[in-house]
Image (tube, rainbow, N blue to C red; front, side, top):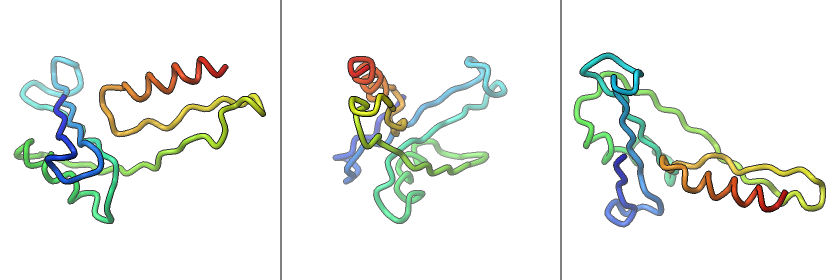
Amino acid sequence: QIVLPQKQLGRKSDIYITLVSYTHQVCSKGKFVAIIAANVETDNPEKEIAPALKLLGQVDKKFVNIVDTYVPKGDGSKDGVYLSNSFDATSHFETCSNDVLALFKRI
């Protein structure tokens, strides 16, 4: 995992790069699958990830997927409906783990 710090990029949040390869049984030998994840902060999300793409060098194929994220309106205490937040851009699952622990405590 590579984390591009927000302060160095002039952003509000970090950009994350994760690489997997043949070792992970996801692609052919000599090839890599890179996943760049970031929170969209402007009207040009592809330009926002340009520093990460530059680090990768030549890219055979690029797929761009932009997904909305959601946060529950309530904590579940009134209606008994307990929902987690959407996954965020972090690739190390820290925020997801914290959300699951908080959800567990509320239930």
